[in-house]
Length: 227
Image (cartoon, rainbow, N blue to C red; front, side, top):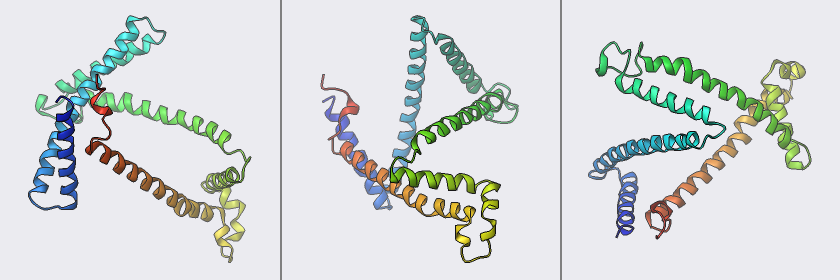
């Protein structure tokens, strides 16, 4: 029964949520609202388990004297410090009753002075990885790669003043659509948008298929092995 009960609960909740979406009437709407609250409660336990796993993983690295154990210490200390400051709302003008992200709180100071610059740094580093991957992927060895290379070149140049000055003489002529900035905008708004929608449709179909497998009990990996 340890496996059957979770499967029954998943089936009932999944069917009720699907019905509440297609039939937005009482009592289904109230039931959906109540189940959403339970989802939030379960998510809290998920955060707790995630925090425990984070600490366990890095404490093991420290215990085994891993070469990156210094970063594990930084991660653990940063996590605990931020957690304590957020829980007790240090620096809040209204004390424990205030908002932990309010002006003047230490949590907001950490977010603005540490987290935001680190996020910007990570995105800055990603630019070099994207450039390196583009160099390897856009080699014109096939017809598809050539089209991809030309489209990428037009978009990159079209976003700079160079793209305007290269074809400025086309402005006001019947061939104005070949003006590089206009061509760049067209590529982004027509072929690129069509590709994005195709990807989103594929993702939606994948989510539907996975959800049906979970609701019907076909996919059971989430409840562990038979043993």
